[in-house]
Amino acid sequence: MSRVIKLAVIPGDGIGPEVVGEAEKVLDAVTAASDVTFDKARFSLGAARYLETGDTLTDDDLAAIATQDAILLGAVGGVPGDPRLKDANIERGLLLKLRFSLDHYVNLRPSKLYPGAPGPLAEPGEIDFVVVREGTEGPYVGNGGSIRTGTAHEVANETSVNTAFGIERVVRYAFEVAQKRRKKVTLVHKTNVLVHAGGMWKRIVDAVASEHPDVTVDYVHIDAATIYLVTNPGRFDVIVTDNLFGDILTDLAGAVTGGIGLAASGNINPDGAFPSMFEPVHGSAPDIAGQQKADPTAAILSVALMLDHLGLSGEAARVTRAVEEDIAHRGSTPRTTAQVGDAIAAAVQA
Ligand code: NAI
Ligand code: MG
Image 1 (spheres, rainbow, N blue to C red):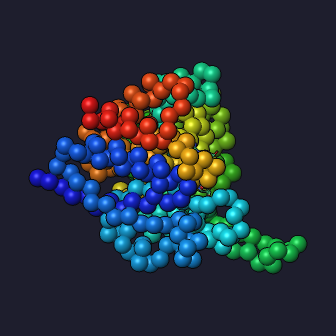
Image 2 (cartoon, rainbow, N blue to C red):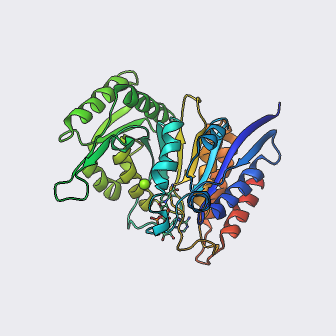
Image 3 (cartoon, helix red, strand yellow):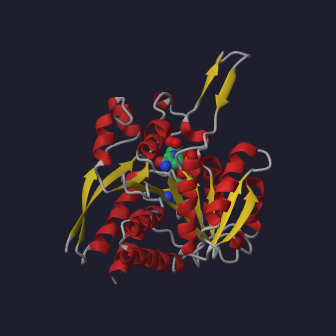
């Protein structure tokens, strides 16, 4: 039986359209001979759209996106510091608005050091872990304000919101991921100082752990986690953590596993009430935009995550294998964005 999947494509700004073009090429190649069709709807969102129309994400955009089955996003944002974008607030008004409105409570970021990938660690050992970052709570909810702003007496509050409901659902997801992997969950937090939120995270992890006696559970403070990610990344399988710690940790994770050109992510609504969104971790890279210098691999690996989420695990595995092959045989000769995409698209069909 043929299956039609409605896909929202948001190429965005800068290198976004370049890397999304290659990701679509690979998606088309891997589904060419199958009975799955992606019915694509394009949304022009980001800094360029803001400069043109003055809006970031309208209610109509959001409603149209919410009816899709999945979202593929490149990157959004203009040149940092561009005065014309001072009031645009692309991060909060677009990216975070999508994540919150579509209840993307899991931010999934796999970190694997592929053979042949360049990395900054002298002796990395095997690196293959997944960060499950909470996506809808923590200090990123916008629960704050400031008074006497701009004066010497300014007061600014940014309250971290943590709910038992929100923690439990993401922790359960992390244990399910671990069940399919090496069966180890590490909670990363700062329970010794953030005793209220940290204490609740710890108690909920312990409670869910009791339902998974075959999963090993570990706890590491956020500061120590940054050390282990560099000195002994092999100790991690699944890391579960809050929104802020996860944001920081995943950038470091990307850095030790071959850099920003390879890091993929999924903003997932596991309940399926809303479409999940898949995107490379990197931004719009205005410094190299339009020059065919961007590595599209992170966007292509985001397609693999999307295929897996949609239950197309065979297709997902073919994309991952093709990427793995490509990375293993990357020499030092520079290739254009399109050349990398072409090579991987050809490999998924081979
Ligand atoms: P960035 O990730 O765009 O660039 C950082 C550095 O990495 C630059 O030197 C860039 O050339 C390089 N780089 C990034 N992606 C690459 C790729 N695929 N291949 C090769 N090199 C790559 O971060 P930056 O410069 O802080 O932000 C630029 C814009 O992107 C800003 O407007 C920012 O707000 C936005 N941004 C958007 C994100 C998103 O859409 N999810 C995430 C991060 C930043
Ligand atoms: Mg970040």
